[in-house]
Image (tube, rainbow, N blue to C red):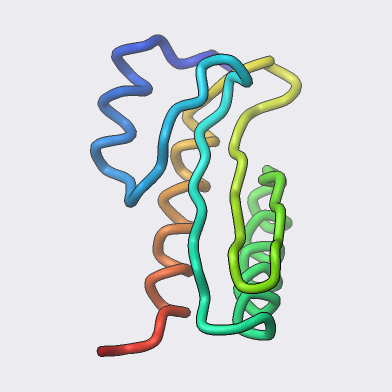
Length: 101
């Protein structure tokens, strides 16, 4: 497991939707707002299945209809390519779960 350097993290974030780099906590983070509590729960469930398949799990916080994803590789104490890949997959699932215009 190789940690990404600052340039790799910065470059990786340009390919993700609304993720920010929290340098203090060595993670990338995104918060999404869903229409209601149950749609937030369904999103978390979908992400849990993908994370389990990848054997790489985000920390997730839910506050009614807002879900915050904290992505880091705890064993490496920082951000790896696995984090960027799972963040991209989370972006896909969020886009699929968002109501259409």
